[in-house]
Image (cartoon, rainbow, N blue to C red; front, side):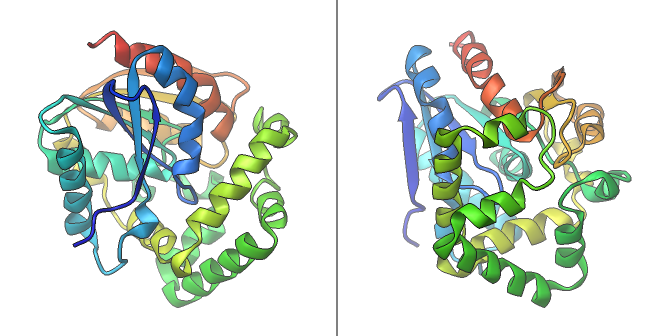
Length: 274
């Protein structure tokens, strides 16, 4: 099977850190960590999950990512950063890697929907309900988003951020952020949007029982105003993950603003493990 495409940022030959992008998302998000990776001698690697055939599902999908990581880092210790629904993928890959991950940082993390009354507080609840109950309609919606991402990425971005809360509203006013996000959306929805569909459908299925298997040292970072991954999700993950050592809640921050604010601190924290 062909290797999964990846992007690399930060130091050329530093401590390897695997970044799991959000859904929607792409390796373009990883640019946030480039400068901080160089400052703290970290090599930030992000795999483009949309380049893997959607026929690869469940543990076979997570194991494939784990094998790609192992081939890339050899016997070096590896650290994970998971953002949004990418945190769900990071947790599942941690699980199949069986103790080979040194530390895990979950940023604006999405928790299992069946673990609480989270969906009603989530800005994406209509999309999640569609993915749970009407997968054909969800696929049609994803393809429509793909068409918008290709022809009108600015419009799709405004639609996604229509309910933006906290400091995410200020981020949307920043031209560099908008440019990065539009590039990200185009990458995410290529290949008929099937990579996006696979991740969302996997996420909305029950998976809370897998958390007890993940003992890696974990830190959780979350914005108090996050309405994409409501704060209650962070509280649940902190209680359910055996290896959770710290949860940091940042006042005034929401989804992406939490990622931007915590990137330098996370990189500094990983460097101290070397």
